[in-house]
Length: 278
Image (cartoon, rainbow, N blue to C red):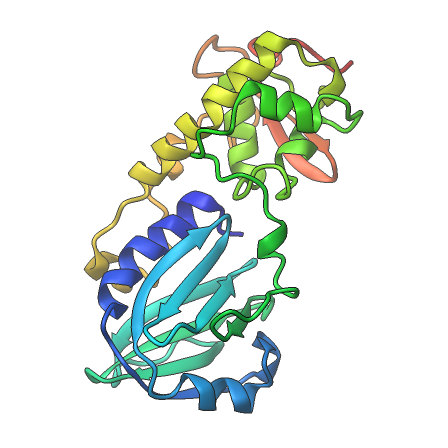
């Protein structure tokens, strides 16, 4: 699943190509990917609207229209967005096509069909997508040791499970939870209520630092993004533990270990993250 660095990369590539462009018409091939409103109304309401900009909230992409409507998208596991010439071959599992006024198309494809769109009118409440329930952005100055300890310090849940809770910090998934905990020298299976004030402080410092690092490493020119169908995640060589089970720790040289935490595969260093499970 794309996590915050990947979703932010998509926003930075797609937004300049859409800003100021009008949608002439919309074609929906799989109605289930439109969560709100029904697909026919979705197409009718977007036709003629002009993109005013994009934003990211956690793992959501938010499209703003000049008239005040908002379009939310969650890519889920396999969703992909491309701005492409209208005559370019379509990717398999292309479910929604926005015809733009400059002859290009914005296409949404999704192999597993878990991705969802929500269209909201100006001032319309959003009680469906879940974006209103998201916690702080990782780069919010309010994300401090006190905030994390206050929200999580009483929980007996594992610290990795807590990092995956989008209601506390938005945008962290399995990959970057492992990277953050390695950098903070905290075992992923530690119970949140056992963390010390020093560990909460390390975690609060590492979360924005690591995510900003991977956002930067993921940068890609629009031409290469289109050529690689949006699947060239350039930060992969910079992952220190995720996907490296059995390899030497980049800090101490010990063999990295794999375990399962909260039903998720987790990789950690038994030496650097030696706080263990409490």
